[in-house]
Image 1 (cartoon, rainbow, N blue to C red):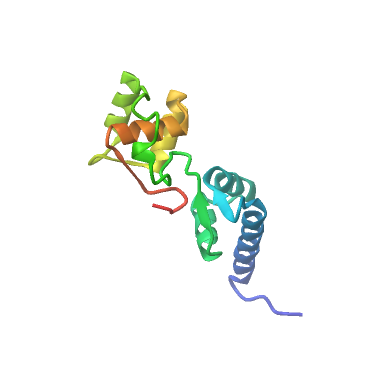
Image 2 (cartoon, helix red, strand yellow):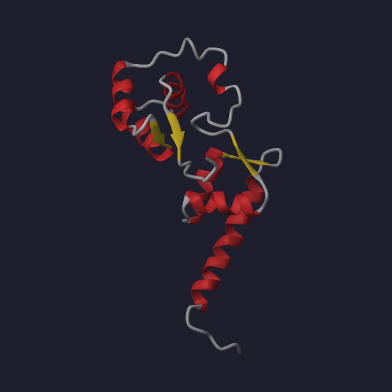
Length: 142
């Protein structure tokens, strides 16, 4: 029987957790890629941070796609229909009050979506139209 060393149980737990997250990631791929919303569900199910899921996805050399805020779309700023998106005055105020140096974190954007009952994609569209840069992806993508 192997003798336990100080801290070894913690290392095994981290390794087991990483293996479980890796398995969930692989099982959740769509066309070889992991959608952002699915990454968040994996984090919740596995009891790990979203950053951990992002790190594990990166270590597996996989890509996260379909950002809930629309950040991975190359044509996001030019997509059809963006000009028609209406940004409520109250939402504009909340976004502008929350940003620092024309920037808003991904976490803040999610929080604002929850508080205002707006979809995350609508928040992403609003930040694009208001020229607010989204930073610090919770999955570590940007």
